[in-house]
Length: 124
Image (cartoon, rainbow, N blue to C red; front, side):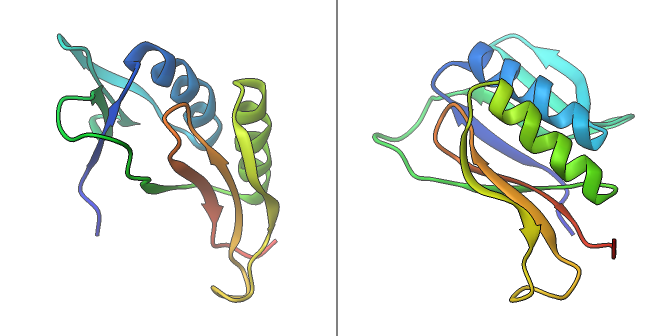
């Protein structure tokens, strides 16, 4: 349903280092880069998640971004990579039965304060 998502970053290089680390755990990688800098991540051939410099607005408005993980182990690796990249842990990996019986997710804050999640919908 989602074609692509872009977020504005206070420091694109710092955010890119974070997303390089965590997205590799769920199968994503840098695909395109443009001046600005603007960086596109995804699973080849097309990026579906973009980082760019903060150009509009004042202050901060939190976004929630959930990345699909192929299995529960990838969710666990996502959290470990995020912590190693300096992220604040919002929620350790666990089953969230209030969403559905197989919803397994972990939540962290990225360098710009966004709520970033890795989620697996498959049973254990």
